[in-house]
Image (tube, rainbow, N blue to C red; front, top):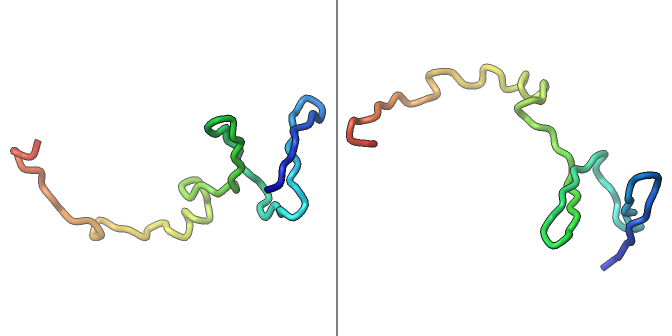
Amino acid sequence: MKSVKPRIVGSSTVLTVPKGISAKYPEYDVYSGRNGAIVFLPKEKNPFTDPEFIKRHQGALSDKDFTQVEVQHDEF
């Protein structure tokens, strides 16, 4: 296990990624976890706001892709 110490750079606290651990993604989301843990996860595109995803899947479903159902009066 590798250890790092936080250091101050300007007005930010920085944690260095140790040699031997490569940052494979261009950007990470950072979360404050339980018991003081700091969690870095690769930033992923939101498919619902990604224009390329929307363009590829637009019109993929139609009304025929859904089953018509009715709610019975005693199902509440």
